Image 1 (cartoon, helix red, strand yellow):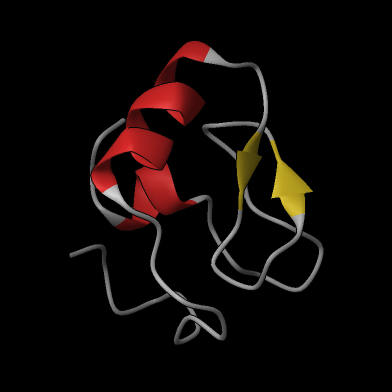
Image 2 (cartoon, one colour):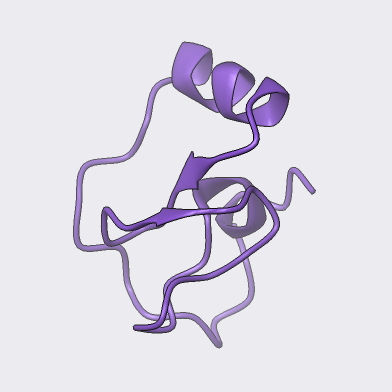
Length: 56
């Protein structure tokens, strides 16, 4: 799991297939549901799920 510097996720965790798709796509969901770049975070401070799971 990612560093504790990020806020607690506010939406349901994605499944493995969704994570794989996000690794290929140029957009990803943040841990609060905002759409972000795979290596980004939203204006509310939530990271992409890929960052949260230390996948990138």
